[in-house]
Image (cartoon, rainbow over all chains, first blue to last red; front, top):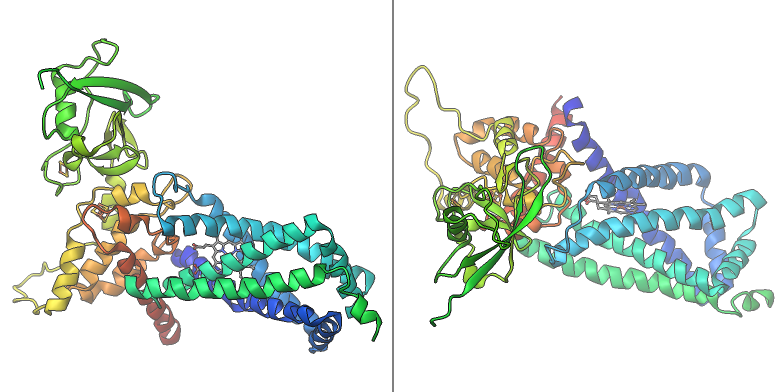
Length: 216
Length: 250
Ligand code: HEM
Ligand code: SF4
Ligand code: FES
């Protein structure tokens, strides 16, 4: 066991990237998609989630710690690579490089995003409506919106391409044909999940987003 | 056709293992059907650089001159490949020639590929058949398996896949893609399969299979067209099965 420590660490890194972190990413973007149906719908979704028993325990053990492990170990892996797309200008080599760039971008983005939202909710004991308002405020600033769009697309890319490598890491897609089909499948997932996330961000950014809320 | 044509080469040289690399330009008379080795033989015959200075001839290694030994691997115009099959007519000039710096450089284009042989030893890339008595003939191999094994058996330990891989570098201890192909080669042999767990465990040791990041440069770069990425994914599958089996059996 001890001699296979780095093998074990890598497999854990890979697994945590999907379960639970990848699962959470997709769930999170589905929840936020409710914002496209107005602030009220979003608030209801948030209240439903906050109603789950032991939600803080779940957040720590199923989101924070796995992401911390994947992020820190991922940073170590990313900094180890000697990227060489200059000499090997192939699709897969670009994906390899982008997987590392988007990993680092996601790390920076997630720290900032969690600070601006989850930490503020905890510090000021906000309710779901206040959270909706806070998000709306953040995203009305065009610079913030642009940075959020970049962070979102980076995270979704990292997840989708990560699923492609995940299937290789565990020996599911073995041959070139299987891996090619897998590329198409995860490219479609990338587009669909990006669409979910981008529509939510744009909905939050609308100037009358909270307006509909006030009438209720 | 009367005018003499020239071939322009820029060679990255290094006088010894610890000395600084430097670039030197050469202009040599063109002949038809030259390859990079014959261009360097020309420099050996007349070791004068483009500035007209007499210099030490460029050092390189080569044996087979038909891309089966792997000794002449070097980086030509940015790509690691065999110098003996790098035809001058098909190369952009000036031809930039560098050693494969993933390996320790001994002199000029000569590198020390011992790490590859150490990696092969580590995974026991052979089939133990020695005994105190005659073990008799081995089992027959199915045609499908034979074809797969033939592809893997073409590896000449040239080092191109290590040079191409972004995860083989001084910051990582990855042994390199080729060794995964060799584990598959010996594990898919009916007699070799008797030691397959041993080879697989050695492959999962530090710096092993798990260091692959799926850039898939190796399979693009391998001059022998070895299905390295298939071997890697197959080994990943073997490792998954092995891991669960071990957990559940112990
Ligand atoms: C939204 C959060 C994240 C998700 C959903 C996610 C998901 C994934 C997935 C599914 C993989 C594929 C694992 C495999 O190849 O077996 C992966 C790989 C990777 N992740 Fe993440 N990740 C996230 C955040 C991060 C962060 C913050 C970093 C930090 C730099 C990072 C760095 C990496 C690296 C370097 C790899 C490649 C690993 C390898 O090739 O072995 N990831 N990620
Ligand atoms: S796998 Fe191919 S590139 Fe790698 S050492 Fe063997 S022959 Fe060379
Ligand atoms: S001399 Fe043997 S491969 Fe070039």
